[in-house]
Length: 189
Image (tube, rainbow, N blue to C red):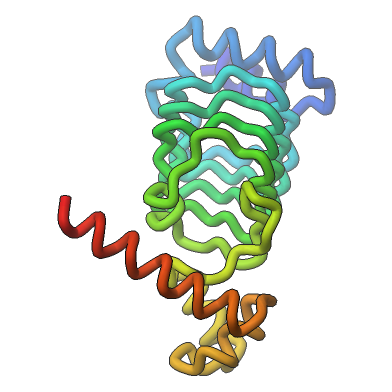
């Protein structure tokens, strides 16, 4: 078990080259995709350009992690803490974001990211979306609603929710309509 701990420590290096080497060794040993990293705190990691295809990273704490242009396709990020993480340009094709916390995450230019993936997240409050706009509340995510209630915001008042989300009322209402259409379309499948 000491080798895996050594590689986990290497993942925390500020030198991207060392991190990428650790990722590759984890893949070769089968530890990247078998759940060995589940629940590990990897805050502030520098995984820019990392090949994390199919990685099992569920429940990992990636607070303020750097994933710019990383390949996270088919990765399991279920329950991961991606608060304030930088996912700019990351490939998120078929990435499982169920219950992931994307509070203030940077998703600018994220590739292959579908609304259906985001609709399964736990929270997106303050996230900057692929189109460079602030998340508008369209999915009514449980974590966002809990956060609003904690802040004593009336979640049934569109004006209050728009202000809470940091968007105009018009943007908020448009987002709510878009979110409803997604849920209707998904229910029909």
